[in-house]
Length: 159
Length: 411
Image (cartoon, rainbow over all chains, first blue to last red; front, side, top):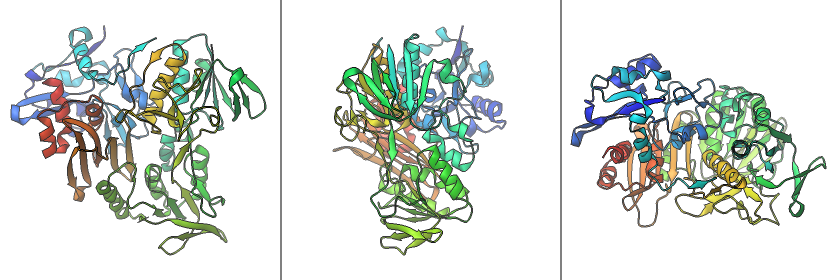
């Protein structure tokens, strides 16, 4: 069974442990600005919303990459960047309509969530259970994706 | 079924792969007239910098990829198409039949009608062959003029600077990337380049080029003439519609319907050569960008092989790295009639964002110096998100677009 990240903003306290864990795991430094998961703060409402890639089926980033540098991990379902192929053209950063592929100016490559190869450190680090890594069916991932696809841009296709 | 695709850019390659996925027994032929494996022009600047070898520009990395997909690749120019008997003639005189044909012939770099533009020291920057010429001729201490500060001109600036050439940029408009960025951000880009030591001459033109010994003698409008080793012409591209001219409907590009079908039922067009639907305007135009080429290739192939997929239109967008300063444009960044706009300008730190609204919806954006979450701008535009109270928040501070985007998601 494929698993995915489940995010429950109601449980998030804004502690940023997830950002720290992500940046340490993937960039070797404790630097939230290098994290692939990002906690957004809505001051007016006192809410925190952790947000990262949903590994969407459309894989806009992967489709748009001109040099085949974004590939699918068949085990985890994650789309991940092959650094030795990425030229840093950033087309994926504008193609992803969720805003979850970002350019890393210090490496000249793009970064995105790859589910840490199936052991996401953000979920491990989250002290309140706001981020969990569970069966894809139970996560409401479909709901998230439906939200994501809540657009009149998806053409109907009957093959 | 016998499918033939002319053009080995992203549109052609994605179409060939899509056809294979949908029909395991079809014959699929991919014809291109460059003596290279299918490659990405997008990657050329990074090859010029020296970050990647030529192979790094290839669209597909596995050497036997096309063989494995049973896509027959032919490296030849197509001379003409005889539509009545569904045949085409290759440059060597041989003939090839097809049931369905895709024209994905792309575009080519043009040179303005100026005396001397055909001299050997003048090159475009469009193909791998051009890249080889530039690598041979633009080295430390060489004097180089880059004609045109549009998308291609800007994206190769860093490569040229890193190669150590004495560079002068000549642009006839009053700012850089005039077709992608507004006046304020285009002006900031110019200042940025000058700060990096590049000489940028805007609102001027090359008048004539001639030979002066080993060098090129370049006459400029309103500026003293210059002697250079190389003149790189990046003044624009134009769709390769020659094969279609006279028998298919063409304008600037080849006209297609929402299925990417031309006025001939068995012939489709995709990518830079096709006037596809624009998401924002609903009109048909040549966008000439990578994501659109990929969308076109997929949709055309689906429809060629019996599917029914209506193109909803591609969002016009671009992202550009000019010597480390990153700019992006989305949708109707020039704004719409009776629209509203919000700007945040921080010229000291080279940060700029402009959002264009129609009612409570975002329709376009320009950003400069921003690298985080900018794809959400496409999301907001393409979802036609009703912003509600977030419209006011964005009018106050347009850099909060990601929160506006998320608010819709978790509200």
